[in-house]
Amino acid sequence: MKKVLLVIAVVIAMAAIAACQPSKTEPTVKLEGKKLLYVEKASSGGDFLTVSRIKKMGFEVTEIFDGEFTTESADGFDVVFVSSSISSGKVGTKLYNSPVPVVYAEPQNISDIDLAGWDDTVDNGTVNGKTIKIKDANHPLAAGLNGNIDVYKSEGAIGFAIPGGEAQIIATASDDEKKAVLFALEKGGKNLNNHPVPARQVFIYLDPDNVVYHTDDGWKLLEAALTWAVSGN
Image (tube, rainbow, N blue to C red):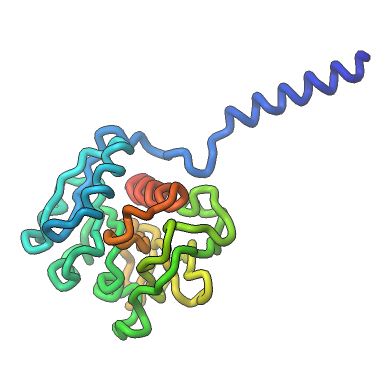
């Protein structure tokens, strides 16, 4: 009987210790009050939903239309989010040398910042589906997820790019591992032109037209991307 009680006590103690351990998705910084600049195109319902979700994380969000955006717009912010609702040319290389971390959802901008080639039929674009494949489950951007996961409740556009340089690929299209749908470059990491980036940069697949179908796992990935980006500075 004493042995049984001892085993039970050990199990309870181990469970208590495990509960105190930080998870992979636990924020490394306090997000409350962090300032995020959200770059979007006017009149996008998907952007409204995404902004609402980001605010729930604790960010103070300022929205700006792509036509009004300049390099200096990012000054004073902790992170910038570039929606794929934008016209890519209106953002272009404006954040190339910005010391502010950036999370891009627009595939063509990945070519602008020299993280992918320029062929928009090969190096960046969208695939139709609802499932992605986690390739690096140990990275914080994976949000504790692994294997094939559904990011949409029904099929929709999933942004991708084929990154180069020192980019770390976290997730790919489920049927094509060359097409990265979630990847990151650490501050100081080299892009395709061997240029060290001045702040953390992230690409995430999210298409605003499909935000309404975003799953809980998909939101976890967005939250992990923003948390990781802002914690690098």
